[in-house]
Length: 461
Image (cartoon, rainbow, N blue to C red; front, side):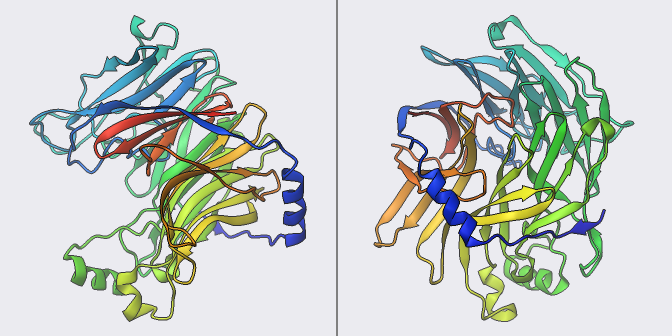
């Protein structure tokens, strides 16, 4: 599929004006109400962990009730499929288990919810024997009632385009339109494409198809560019997909030099950010891929974080960047400087209208570094970025904190508000609109701290 690059420069006059307008909005006062442990886990040593389904979420809010999914490592079981999926509910007495699967799996299980109170858990049980390293799987979706989650569940089987071979390395994306009661599941097949299945408001798997990856004709060996760890959104039957390149190092000189360093013949790139979208998913048609950002020239790195869709169809994308691989700098690009940043862009009709950095550090830029970041939409429709920052500030003081910054409709942003947690979460999920949750003045976080999954509730007063 053809790749296009569409960038439009926006004048600073418009940005300055929007900041003035945004300053008239009532500022938020974040209040941290809860910090607590949900469960602990043992490493499965299978290449995945509870945060592995990074572009999805493992926490949803339905009214006053919060659900979180997890994985349990099976003692003495052999990888790769040596985990069981779990589902928890938070009550006034704390967290309680609702479900633990019996089918072995590798990856964590993403969650979505509908406004009407239904909660859906994506699982991917293997079809292999216990001692088999890898092999086929059968994706399933379990439907629970938020009001009576212990009353049992329905098992939904996605309807695919033909009979694709799906496996434990699903790289799946699971998102919902909570208001319209619709959902979509993407699941990768090798290095060529992703299979997808759409379930409509009537409960029918009414559309399915293949999302074919962009093509890297410029590589030493031209090849499809597998696009993984995406942020995906479904809104009014439009689908938006933004992920990072995930292929074995495509440049021979770099791959050979890395082999001298690591002794490994593989090393994945993660440095080109691609975006595409469908105006109406039942048609099965997607627009051409657009490259939003790239660190391909200096062997850097990109990690997709989140996406938010405005009512007018504007798309906001959040991601982190590393300018270069310092191991290769002296030999291949000795004059380049290192830079770390948390970036966001406003995309309209496939064009990058505005691009800004919320955090940047590196050589000549200071000592701040960023961890995870997520978007959050409040009840009144305001968009915020919530993100983790550590390192050292301008005064040279060590920091480990979260920040909350409003993102205005024109792509400009306000001043950050520091949010202090007793136990900061460098990596976390949120109860996001992309998972079907309602816009909320409560920010729910779920993240990993040293083998313990923790929950944080922040009231946005």
